[in-house]
Structures are given as structure tokens and as C-alpha cells.
Amino acid sequence: MSDVKKLIIELLQSKEWVSSKELLKKTKQKYFDRRIRELKDEEGYDIINKFVNGEPHYKLNSSKRNPLKERTYLSKKQKDELRIKNKDFCPLCGNQFSDIRKMSYDHRIPLIKGGQGTIENFQIICHECNNQKRSQCRHCDLDCNICFLAFPETANPVILLQIDKETHDKISILSKKDKLTQNEFILKIIKKYIK
Image (cartoon, rainbow, N blue to C red):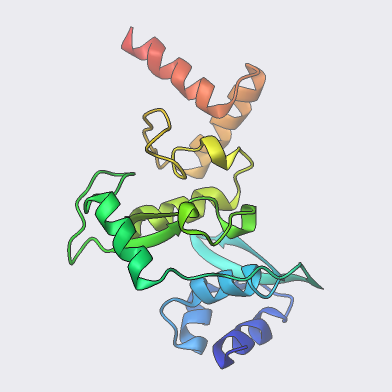
């Protein structure tokens, strides 16, 4: 295990929530969140996170470690194949890749949801969409195989919305009251408004 990962585990073992600012400062790693994912996926650590005042905080939930899952990486040839197939556009947002809009090689079905490290489970999406997808997948319990974020080429068209927590909570309560999923409830509101 790398020194950075050891440091992260040491910080998270305090049983208190550790802020992303503190992790960034102590590890001096811009992508410490990737190291945390590797600790969870590859090393089996039970690391949880929550937002406090809009900032991610992390904690080691238990000393129990989950079964290890090896993270695989694409070869240069495989990356080239995916780039040719993608035609330099993000399939989620439709924006063209450039020096500013960087590509991310994304596991369609995340490792934490049982996804494999095979080329068939990879897609190229932009860095911004990758961050959004990671955030959405973290707490999702829907079937990845029919998800737009995992398989945009076969799923129904999707509009991704960013809403505040208060609105989300209201939608959650009202959709349960109507015995609808949140998606069905929002679609019902939109259709009613359009008519």
C-alpha cells in the first residue's frame, strides 16, 4: 500500500469525520478521492462519506474489510479503440473533448456495484460528467444495466438536474405519497406543465 493510502487510513481511523480540505492539506494529493475509491474497491476498506456544509467528509465506518476487488487499467491500444468509437464527444452531455474538457475512462457499472474491469465495461465520458456520475452512483440502488449514465447509447433520453437538498427531500416525500418513483413524479409534473 502506498504511503498516501496509509496516511488516509490513519486520518480516517480517528472515528471523526475528516473534511476533504484536511485530506487535501495532509496528503498533498489533488486526487485523494481516487485514492479513497481505490482503498474501498481494491483494499476493501469500509469508508463512508457525507456532506457537511456542502463539503465532502470521510470516515472509516468499521475495521471490517470487504472482499478485495482488483482495479484494472486499460492498455494504450484499448484506450485508442474507445477513443475511435467515441468520436471525441461525451455521450452524456454531448460536448466535444478538448484541452479544457478532458476525457475520463469510466467504468459503466462501478466496481462497487459489481462492475468488471473489462473493456466492455468502460466508456469515455468528460471529466465533469464522470464526477457527476460518481456522485449519482454512490447512493443509487437502481439497475445499472438500464441506466442512462452507464449505457447512454441504449437508454431513453435523459435530462440531468441539479437540485438543492430541500427540493430533493420534498420531491421524495411527495413521490412516495403518490406511490411513484421520483423520476415518475418529476415527469408527471413536467407533462402537466407542458399541457
